[in-house]
Image (cartoon, rainbow, N blue to C red; front, side, top):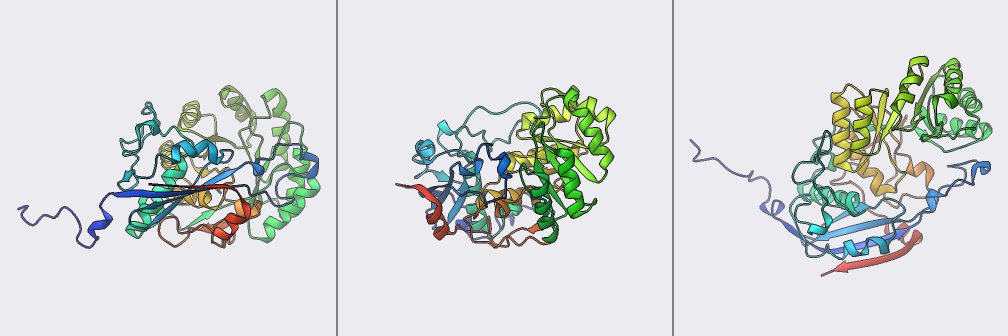
Length: 396
């Protein structure tokens, strides 16, 4: 009965299934500042300038001539990742598995609820993990003629909801920002906050500028400190009405603070799950109303699937990466059924350039996936040259 059984589909060229070898890696270290006025009001400019931290972009070329792109998290210089990049030329890769990487790349397997990867997906110790994951998926998608979202299980949506973004701004400045967001079709905005900022005045300014139906996400990044500091503020926000939520008001190792706030106030509290372990704490504590999930592509999907099983929704958080990092995370967000809340894909709204050739076609608060294979985008080498601080090529 098995006489005519075939182990592969003849419609797929055999060379697509063969292992390939990395022949060359280009690395570009760049610094792309934020646009004037896109982050803080001048009165808050004493905050650290995260936009001036370096970002490294890598281009991984295989022996079949294809090139995949990746982006290293901000704050890591080319000199810091040079020892890892030197190991890549000559490595044979199969699909986008990390199994063939040098042993020094692999940490111990992560064990425990939500923290155990399938065998081929190792816990990568160097800062290159996300960048290489993206580059290998980009290569695999180009080789197979499909998108990264398809390799991650398929896209549930073709366009992703996105909110506008700013950091700490005065009520006068944030009103202008909200009007701009509203005029461009966005349905909401995410703002940063610290204890002592004029939050009530900011929210009133946004509502006056964009309407009470306009969504507002306030992110204090744990700096509202405790219920003693914050309960009165939350009650004032509740009295304003409208669509207001608060992300990470309290420390995440103090879930009792979250429970106390939720017991007296209807403002939804959202939990930023930067890693699987942090997600586990939030899910087990049952102290939040939804999640902002992050991590690498597979790590994000693991978080998003767990959020779905637990009955919650999420959005994809970002570090306002450049274009390669943003688009990679867009593919992951599209492949996650629970990722229905507005995500943070705002780099072209905030930075001077994203260093990719794509026009970022926001429409009515949504951003569609690029239509090409792999990532669907390429580096804009002219703009890379403009913002470049360092570069290197590694080959064998």
